[in-house]
Image (cartoon, rainbow, N blue to C red; front, side, top):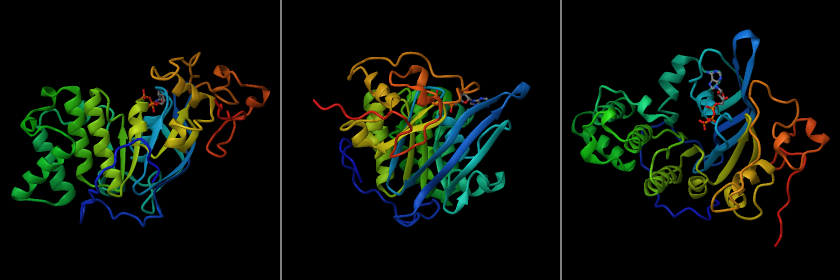
Length: 339
Ligand SMILES: Nc1ncnc2c1ncn2[C@@H]1O[C@H](COP(=O)(O)OP(=O)(O)OP(=O)(O)O)[C@@H](O)[C@H]1O
């Protein structure tokens, strides 16, 4: 595993976990190929939310999916869980444990996928938690449903799940509306870890948390990956991505434009796609230089490279969409600048 900046974590593999069996070390836990999502709108308009995404995730690996707001990260996660609205159409494949999640029916998704093969730390925890029940009650129900635990074991396992997500025991009997945004996020994280699913999707799991709690949450998710699970973390927070990720996928206007090892992305030689470079250069601790312009509307994408209008390196070649080659989808990939 390639980890330069994240802390070393103890092996927390749990024997006889509740989730679906973990695949052999070399088999991908998640194999996504050619995943596209279109939303049909009134008047025949289409929103191209995700286009031709392909990547694999192995046991013990964390892939951070980063990119500006609205580039399609959450839609990609929703597609994997079968949680897209009725006006969505999907293409491609997304295979977990031999099951194509895009082709699975709702009954299969509800009974064997959500929480069991694929866990979710949602983007809006307050909307995800049931408002009329305490955190303890929701945790115990999830533990009962996913592990079969009963009686006194149920209470202990619910408390252990809370502890793993750094949710304070003395807040377990509170209702969601009595929690801060950060505590609601930790309650949702605790619920997502209960099922011990081979694949965990974490959609902005650190939103609303202060830096210490970001680090604790990220480290807990990292331990989950180190215990042999695959983790897809969607985030705006590049510092959190650097702390946790083995690889980084950068999305722009619905496409993955850079897919590379995290140490190479954050360190040397750095990303090769001009947009990915721009994301890093925009960080206050780096050049603090914003990327000029705005991303295109996903309902009115240009025929060529979607970043060309904002890119200082664009030429007429960029009037065609570049394929992802050697980890970069760019006709003019940038080479490292040597000091
Ligand atoms: N039901 C829907 N109908 C039409 N368009 C939708 C629908 N759901 C999402 N979209 C569009 O799909 C695009 C991608 O949205 P998505 O939520 O995946 O972005 P994101 O990268 O996760 O952004 P953020 O980081 O702000 O959550 C956006 O343009 C959004 O408006």
